[in-house]
Image 1 (cartoon, rainbow, N blue to C red):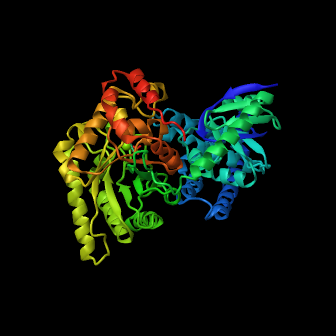
Image 2 (image 1 turned 90 degrees about the vertical axis):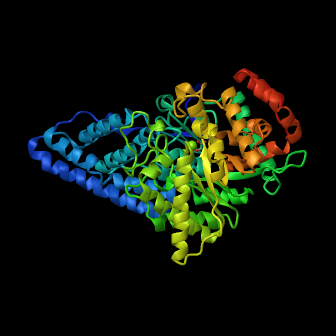
Image 3 (image 1 turned 30 degrees about the vertical axis):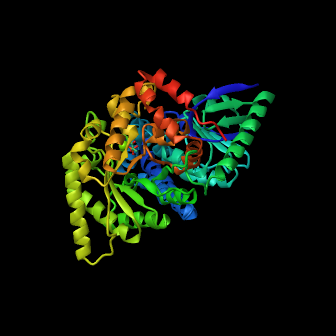
Length: 575
Ligand code: PEP
Ligand code: MG
């Protein structure tokens, strides 16, 4: 019988297939005590299971070599590292010994202990690491029983499971699995990032699916809305086919725009940059005709590892992105760890009561000047291979820009003295994402060569609305008169001085907001490459002169409803 369920949208795309259930075995483990005389044998049995999983992980890593981006390869690496984590393993030995419990039950107790700590964390990124721990626990449990963790996927299956590891997704897709639904998970997890880059539909947080679906049920899923339908009826199937046909048609039309200019109807070119976290993002950006990389989030090189990447490691990563862009400019942002981008390298002050207002971005870099110096040297060296700009995150005023500029100049002088090939010019830019930087822009604009508005943080700080708190979804919006006024002032200040200005927050990726951003005076936008063609299409439907003339009406709007009316009235008509 038809059942409609829902979860959280994670990776977009619709899929129709047979549910393949992978039930969480660890939930079935009962409290089991063992005899004192069996303790040593039980510990040995557990360690044999750890060895088995270690070998499995090694062979998985070898098999996937080259199939994963470096970042996702690191996730597989991280899972292997968890196996060596004394917190995880010695805790289990102790439980077996003191219970004395069976290895299975000790595993379950230890899992609950560790995940309780993670669940209590405010940081959504860290909370999403429970998936990684669960994955290892599940593998260990399977090894204790010589059971295979990964059911071979069958072409046309949709995997329904409690959690899925990033590396599994690549394997499942290769076997023909068309989508994945998980009971746990988060839209910020590594698995979600992986599913997006594989273009594999993923819905997370769908507890009900695990309880209600049975192996072999027909399941229809929509990774864009989180909608799940078990045993869909004729109407659902019709809707599904229509949606698939429509998105194919849209993709075909969009693909025609790959080589077209991002030009308004009245002939003005808007510069479209891409945001990138990996080299793969850069090559996608290149293929789709991005003007360059407007934001390379370098913190992704620092996440998920237990040590800091040295100058050589960073240099190679930056150089490869520069080479992938074949002469188009790459904007490398210095480290922006902290708050929603937590790290494992021990640099962030974890006990901060308000991490979003704490030691993050350039503040952290300036507190660890050696770290910034290493990063600047790596960036400057990469400029020998193609044009590079340096972007500073979380600037709140003049001093930070002045200090980073002095450090950048020192690095350039040092590397020239070492005889390195370096670009003749390395423009330095500031992110405008803290209200004080926006308001005090005239005091330091002369120290910058370009600017980038980080609208995600600017909205968060202007409206005092945490960008990661789902309860504030209705408050966290760029459609607020305060946000529009600040954007407008920043754009006017940059345009007056002839300083190039890009907007690189999520709103740049929203085609319906393109008329609003152009009306405010922006002429450069930066977004994830997967949105580039949709934004280009929207630009090609805009009349810039008309929009600029309508800007005063937009700025007069008194609330969200008024701004939404303006947006609706200036909606781009599809061609
Ligand atoms: C922003 O804040 O808008 C931005 C682009 O930076 P991030 O999302 O990486 O904080
Ligand atoms: Mg930001």
